[in-house]
Length: 319
Ligand SMILES: Cc1cc2nc3c(=O)[nH]c(=O)nc-3n(C[C@H](O)[C@H](O)[C@H](O)COP(=O)(O)OP(=O)(O)OC[C@H]3O[C@@H](n4cnc5c(N)ncnc54)[C@H](O)[C@@H]3O)c2cc1C
Image (cartoon, rainbow, N blue to C red; front, side, top):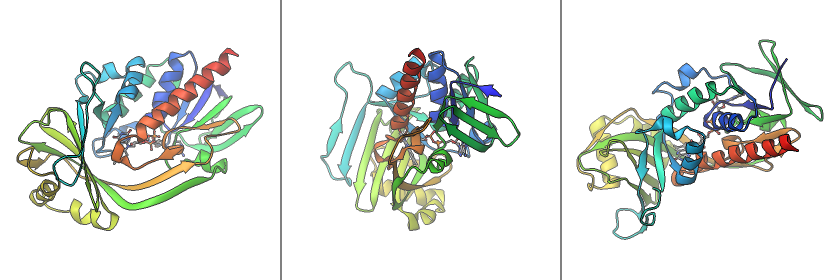
């Protein structure tokens, strides 16, 4: 039987961050995830870039993750919110001398760097790919049987398996959820003029359209929310026609546009678990809650779950 302080189901961005945070505080963990890292770190797996808010970035700095992404994150120095392309709107800017509002990082790179860092943690063990066959949670602790016969034991189980979280379902935790009937089209565009580290949230009656600055200064990630039924038609457009549709929504302030990578669509919905804990179980990340990506907060909320779980585990160890 393999023992640890925490068994983490899900080696996504949140599960990996939690394992690293626990390790930094002398707590051991075992991550179990059916995904093969070689598959989920391929460019074709996840085309998203994440806006990591400055507080979350400080957390990644403390964990030694930000340093591994040196030169790869694009600072967001202003966020401009408007209704369509009309002049005016709201501009958020940090005070003189303050940190940027956030850092744009490609998910694929963040995932790879977190996995590398977790693998180097003496107290974290990554079982990927590995599948859970059975879980028992009771007063005595948690026992997880894997389908290859291995048995894991710990005082605490963390469900970080994303929005469909089998651990949450097995604990009968109710979830409030709804769909937006929208899908997010995610693409990267190259543009003629520099973005000057500005992010744009442009609101249309059909859904919000976000332009997020990437490195080098003439590349941006687009997150474009469209009615779900229309997403496939946009994604299938030839490059020139797709660039023209994007230009219609963002205007020409960045000059001529070119598509700079593949296109992805993500269904959009909201969900929130009625409880974050059950006997010897805590939920973290999308297993606990998922929100519309317009404000770029889903991962940021999950990182707070990881920080809170680490603090509680540490307090329990000391008591
Ligand atoms: C278009 C889009 C843009 C976004 N942009 C931003 C942004 O700018 N900023 C931001 O903060 N957030 C953003 N988000 C949200 C963010 O991507 C998610 O909140 C975040 O990825 C959730 O991470 P997670 O580790 O909780 O879950 P996931 O990334 O879903 O990872 C779950 C892991 O669990 C594993 N797993 C699945 N089933 C099992 C099982 N049975 N047992 C064990 N493991 C299992 C999976 O293989 C996976 O590795 C965006 C979301 C979308 C859709």
